[in-house]
Every structure is written in structure tokens, then in C-alpha cells.
Amino acid sequence: MAELNVNGKKYKLDVDPETPLLWVIREQVGLTGTKYGCGIGACGACTVLFEGQAIRSCAIPVSAAEGKKIETIESLEKNGQLSKVQKAWVDNQVPQCGYCQSGMVMATTALLRSTPKPTDAQIDAAITNICRCGTFQEVRAAIHAVSKA
Image (cartoon, rainbow, N blue to C red; front, top):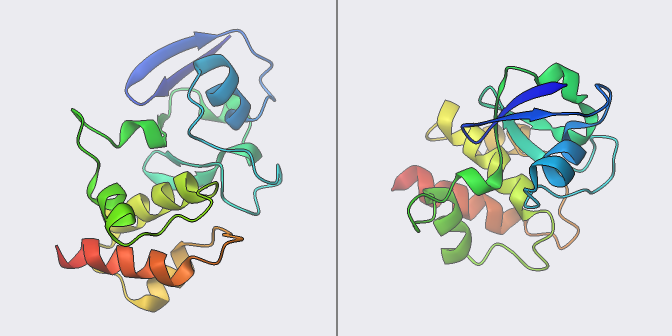
């Protein structure tokens, strides 16, 4: 039995302790905004916040997440209002296909919480998610827009 805290809600789930957190979030908790990309922690499509840090949820077993605060893309919108990062994504037309974007938004959220006015070098170091559409310039513009707001 795994006990998780996802987006401020407690869950008791009967899952194998070695099941990747990604699959528990998607299949047992029912939050599908976190995407499967590569399954080896390389691409970042599955990025969630784990105790405030951006992690690749496909590469961590659910047993390591017990009792930890987990935030998914679904946690960012509040009372019908997009988060500042989500709004900047829309305003700067970041998404193309959009598949990787929930992971990018979560990685950006973690970055801006710890570094409210990041440099380009800090952005490049923190946002290691892969976007096959190549929206990296738009991502950087959106991050700078949030940091100036």
C-alpha cells in the first residue's frame, strides 16, 4: 500500500512499490497531464515537482515518493486562473504539438520558485527537457516574461 500526497490530496493505493511514479499518477490517481515520453528519465515529458524540485517521474519508484509532496501540471491552475507560467506559455505561443509542454511548465515552475529572475545560462541549466518541435527560444522568452512581471 502506497500513501501519496499529490496536489495536496492524500491517496492510499495498492501498487507494486517499484512501479514508476508516472504510471501511478496517470493510472491510479487519474491525472493524465503528466506525459510518458521516453521511460528512462531523459526527455522530461513526465516532469513533476517532488518536494518542490523538478524530477522525472518515470525514473522514480512510487516507494520513494511516499510521504513526499508531489505537484503535477493539474495543480497550477487555481480557481479557473492559469498560473503565471501557463499564461506566459500562451502569451508567447510556446506550444506547437504541446506534448512536452506540461513537463516544461513544471520544470520552469520549479526554476522560477528558486530563481525568480534567471539568466539564460540558468534557464539552459535547469530546463533540460527535450522538445522535438524546437520551441526552446519561445520557452526562454516565456520564462523571461514571467521573471519581468
